[in-house]
Length: 331
Image 1 (cartoon, rainbow, N blue to C red):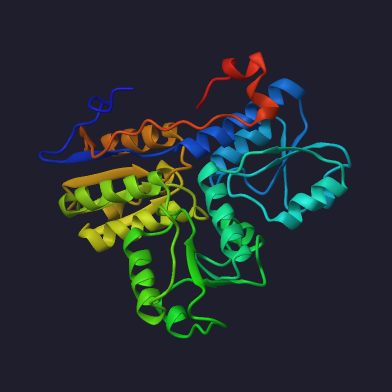
Image 2 (tube, helix red, strand yellow):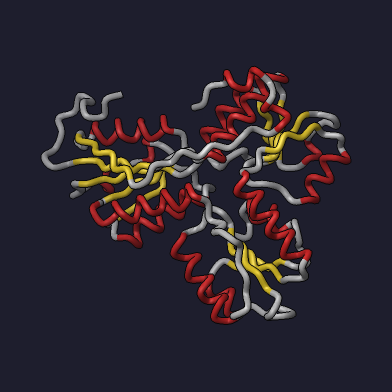
């Protein structure tokens, strides 16, 4: 699709800055591939606990192909195939799946698994674990389940100021992988001020894709009258991109599921519109946004690459050895 020629009349000086990297990260690609390959190998229905990734278009597409999305394992027939979503699950959920003799395929993002393993390590060493994140997010619920008696969730600096722990000398922190870098840095500073002995993970828990997309927004936001983030409302990393854009100097920024949500008033007096996408948003939705902007006079599109990404995660062993797996195309 040629975004520079959409049959519009155009407007002098109106342009789009298309951010790169944007959209699907390696963990999301892997999770979607797992569902598609499982459907191809075993046929429907394939049950998926929660949304495989937080994007309604992806979920609807996979549902149409035969995936059945459920909230509770009691909704899955005993012995059926079940996929755990990219956000991970608690040990209690894994145990329930074993009891129901479900044939599990694990699509947990490897970077989320890393956080789970860090939680287990802290708990085994008798530490209080401070988990920085959004309490109701699927990822936080799963990580919290690794050591519920030892873990406390904090979402902001005020939570840290109210925090009391049994032993200030044995305390560690972990984070949800999709948080705002700047906001999280402030929470960690406050934790270190209150608990000087606190230990953190060997490397940042905030995933590479979240960091890269936020850094791209920070670089471009000061040039933008409007910055649009393509992503669903329940996507944490997408919501953070809107916050980062506003804090970094964009005159306005909005989260949209698709092009139909663009409002004419947002474009009034706009000359430069930035466009990016959360880590679970399909590229075809970005294409549609660019077309919609071109129809409103934003014909010239510049792709701004802040960082190249070349990250891939292996498929789980239940799928990796099958020849069909390599033939499944990605969105």
